[in-house]
Image 1 (cartoon, rainbow, N blue to C red):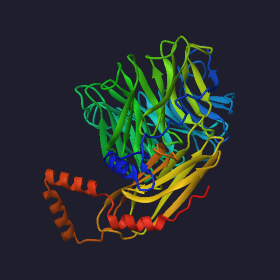
Image 2: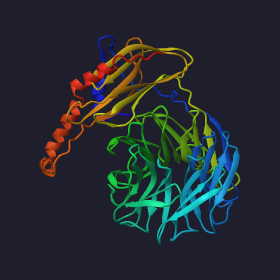
Image 3: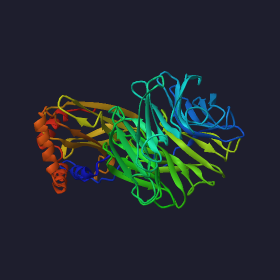
Image 4: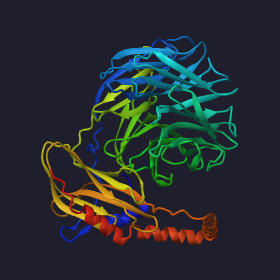
Length: 566
């Protein structure tokens, strides 16, 4: 989902004129919830007399929730990892602390495939240096299976962990023990038992630190964090996005920012193969700091960005793509709410346009650090509260009800981004009608400028159906091209306003024949001879032409007869 800006206008021009319909008024997707925030379902606090702070939450396979952070109310030291498991209603099932006599902080938690949990953060009680990465694996009841430390003589701490497809783990954070500068991104890969397989640092001469990591669809990794070394401003930091292969070798990196501080907190790969980043910016927006949402394509090129905030300090700590293709952000706001600062939840559509927002909190300080959409379509938030609870700061867990959708939704996506001869282009189209009544529409389906289908379609009440179209990829042409699927649901009568729409980008890459070393050298020499102007012209030509006509016609014939029975 999502759009590549160079093609959006062409798609719209194709979609707005039909011989059978006349003029179509394109107004964009309707708000998924009529701009009404979902209601709060329940909230719970956990903590003692001291400081207890939640950083990470995930829904578990039993419908409950796992929450991780640190506590100085309980445990053995100054602060300990604190793991709290709840049922679906937020009632505590059990809790566990992990730590020594000094300070430990858990920044990330995930349920593992065996039903247990993996936690990552920092320890000053164990390890080799001032602080080390600390990885703790538990069983389903929170009992420690094993733990591992990683680090050198100085300060190192993990901010994010994920179980990988091979059953191991990927950790990302910051190191001052290794690398090129004051601090560097540090990426550590382990096997299923927590034994290090490899590690990589990324950074320059100044301070750089990773805050989030995720394994990508191609088996590599995407890291996000901040950089002073490669900042656009003078003495301030930028968003920094680093993509690696499966062995941690850097494939590319991108930075985003202005003249002042810009900090990224969270990254996720999106269904179109690109990436969504969230954090806060002082370079752009309305206030001292604003929520900053940045969307890129699969190569990290900026597609769009949005700021949200008022005159005060507003910062996003977590982002996730939602089932409707949009995004949910959580953080804190000084600009809005009831207290000194409040937890702030912001929902956007797939292009980053605000659909709704909501603050949570009392008269003091309250903050959300993690958000996830739940299986029922609602949301779970975790953070800390001073306004409520037993101590100076308590774990704060909030559940929101599902959004009450009032309009049909259409979604299109492919199973990957790049396709070559011999592959199968699998495209899925999802129709949803969440209302209690049938909805009459026109279904519009285009491949770039090529019309696939314009047909009346009635969506039954409470309808939710996915259709997959599989297209064998042939040796279509000897050069690469980009293509875009476009789908929309239109009102059945003039002026045929758009109820909802979506796009999916994909790319054809021809199979390269094996060339001799001499031929490869000649190709490389020819490539290097291209001037910047020629490169620009070549790129503009390819962008303008898009999918070749004969290929579009071939695909249209194969899928034009697909019926979407409702």
